[in-house]
Image 1 (cartoon, chains in turn yellow, orange):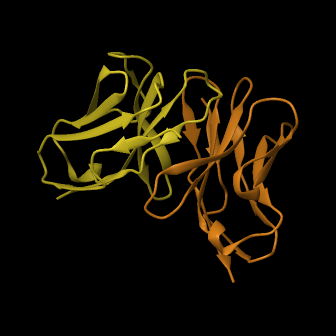
Image 2 (cartoon, chains in turn blue, brown; image 1 turned 90 degrees about the vertical axis):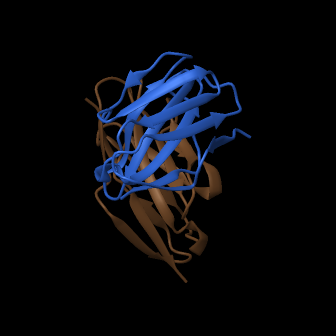
Length: 113
Length: 111
């Protein structure tokens, strides 16, 4: 089974802090994704990566950056956390073709005070 | 631009009754359609997908979905609901490089 793990289930940070969310997948998938999930809005794509050191902006990249130094690891960075970034963050991975399903991690619930 | 609509925030059904969770989409080109389920405090799990071929797609846990090109719909169905089916369901479409998700529908199955 594909396993996607995220470094924290719950995280509480202060406004202005730099926040790192880590995601690791163990199935050698080319694609990795970061989403945020908010009630009524579904999942919105922040960034995705289709190869090491490659990244593409999603629908809501503002206030976020990403890093993919190794194929299995994809990090989401909040350079200066703000209260409107309080959300559930989900990482996913998939094979490269568009009709392959994505596999999701358990999520990180981030609260910014 | 592609989009997905799930018109119902919540669907209530009695255990043993059939259930339908609705999804409509808008996309240019051929759509690849997906259903995911999210149980409390967990990530999304893949249920089923439509790529091409038979319009009725069968997936995990007894769920199925019907692709209707003329109505641009991909409704999720199950003949007999279980209390354990209570969860948040998401429809998604991929017609390019990215998945676009609907807002989600909460399914409540009552004993």
